[in-house]
Structures are given as structure tokens and as C-alpha cells.
Amino acid sequence: MNLRNKYDIPHNTVITIAGTVGVGKSTMTNALANALNFRTSLEKVDANPYLDKFYDDFERWSFHLQIYFLAERFKEQKRIFEYGGGFIQDRSIYEDTGIFAKMHYEKGTMNKVDYETYTSLFEAMVMTPYFPHPDLLIYLEGSLEDILRRIKERGRPMEQQTPVGYWKEMHQRYEDWINHFNACPVLRLNINDYDLVQSHGSAEPVVERIASFMEQTKRLRKI
Image: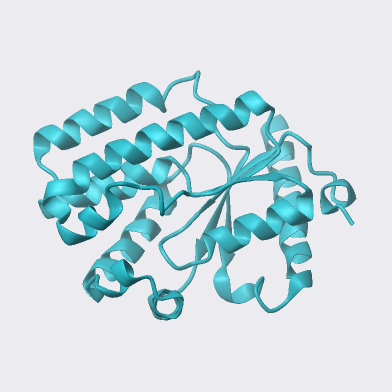
């Protein structure tokens, strides 16, 4: 059954999935796309020419990595809306500036000139009336312990070599970021409230929550 029709979710809806490493963004993206008969926009980690270099030397490669992400996500966002919507997107463009670039600047792994160049470019490209924002951002949240367990289970070498302190820092920064995020409506989902891997039917309760939240948001906008 196409759950999009059952729960009356518009065919041109664009939903972005956000959350720190290990929360299951790609799994959620694919599950919702299948349930709603939407297309997916997945983060292309393996094609990123800077990622391995970045994990080896944060200070040298942080600016290059952020510029690469900004360009790729901007092009992808433009493509999604030119197509007419109907997409589930893995990771938002907003996290790049609100979390990653800011973290590297504050920790000294991105210098002031690079940080100001990056944020200026981000605001000129994204924070304008012409940039199409998603209809909904789903924020996947969980405890640091749960997230560290998931990172260990999926076993990506570059993540295994990264100090636990980095993931702790990321977890806190994500929480701080989402508490102040207002570019589009946000639905929070705790990763312990569903199991998309073991239970194939568990996507429907998530879709039901999305539909209810979107309807509530629509009513509030009319007030």
C-alpha cells in the first residue's frame, strides 16, 4: 500500500533527515521513500574525495571538505525542487554551517579567514528567499551510548579510528543546533521508538506521525 495516499501526504513534499553520525539517516531515508513512493537523495560518502584526508588531518582539510559539501548539497537541493519534489533527503545542508564548520572554527581546526569565507558563501547561497527549503526536517535523536554502539556495529574504518571525544562533541553540538533551528518545521524522532531494520511494518507509525505533524503545522500557519 502507498502510505502517501493513505495519510494524504502531498506528492511534491520534500522531507530532509538530519542527525549525527550513526543514528540511521540512510535507513530512515530508504524506509520512508519506499513507504511514500518517493525518490531518495542519499549522501554520497564514498565519492567524497576529501573525507579520508579529513579524518587524517582535520586542520588541513576541514575547509576543503565543507566547501565540497556545500557545493554538492546546493546542487542536489536545486535538482530536487526542479524535479517537482517527492523526495526524502539524507542529511540537510543546514548542518554543514550550523555544526561542522562552526565546530572546526571553535576548536581551531579551521582558521578565521576560511570560516568567514565559508559562512559568507553559505549565507549568499542558502539563506535567501530564493533557496527552496524542505517542507519538513526529521531530526533523529538518541543517547550518546546508543550512537557509539551503532557506529561500532557498522564498522567503517575511518570512523573506528576517530576518538570517542569527537563523537561526544558532535552529539552535543547536534543537540544545541536543533534547539535553535528554525529554517523549516522540525519533527523529532527518538531512534529507540522504532526499528526499521528488524520490523518492516514499523515505517507506517513514522508516516502517521509525519502526516499528523504536517497537518498540525498547516493549521498553525493559518492562525
